[in-house]
Image (cartoon, rainbow, N blue to C red):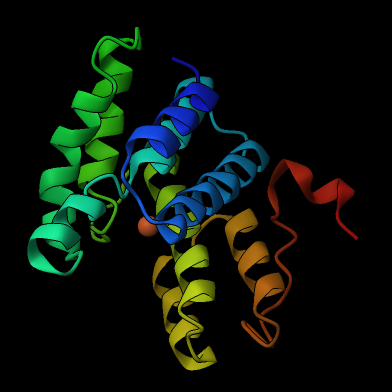
Length: 181
Ligand SMILES: [Fe+2]
């Protein structure tokens, strides 16, 4: 199953609201671009992109049952749902395992290991910050706490003018730096 096939499958079978669908498409888009700019290995990039597509796979059923989409419950249920989603898809077992791990830890911010995990968190935060119209003070807290890649930090500063003011331009905007204005 390609990433595009996973996207279409989730759009057709995920049971999400239009907001759910738009959210995962945005998170996948940011994850794809930041991952490519940061030069991830092929296996990291794939794990990141598949995980970005299905990271909130548990939300529709959780919302139906509990009326909300609690972060911990998402992680607990999402991993198993992601494994089921990719069953029979032909993905290598170690890739499936990493996708399941990432879905099960996408709200876990301590002990983050691997660019795929880090960028999934960054991509989800960018989308959430915009969708929830967070005040700059909250966005700033999020930025300091979660953003580590040069590209993720540059994108966040571009999306939220005023963020990181006074922060020296590190010049670390990944492989895409030469094409930036
Ligand atoms: Fe999300």
